[in-house]
Figure 1 (cartoon, helix red, strand yellow):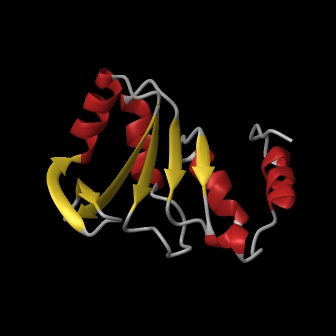
Figure 2 (cartoon, one colour; figure 1 turned 30 degrees about the horizontal axis):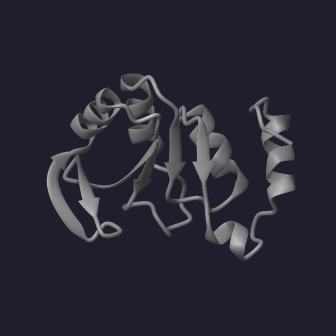
Length: 127
């Protein structure tokens, strides 16, 4: 079971949001992720609404913090703009996987080339 979580950082505090980041819940992100793992989530898909669609990179600081506090795989989402963004989210953000949409849909990044780029940086990929 993969739990998808949209969150937004405001004034240094991460909060869970609904409806694609439009409705605040008042739930603190890190508290919710620990609870989700306790309830049996098998993976977390974390989308930073601050980064989503920006093509300025993933929320690596938050991802690194999350990866330290949970014991299940973490998927990064929101912010991919170039191949280095993916490498950074695996190395700095400690994500287990990364999700992107528009850079693949519009062929700004070709998946085979991205995999070769990551492999050249000793980041494990599946071919």
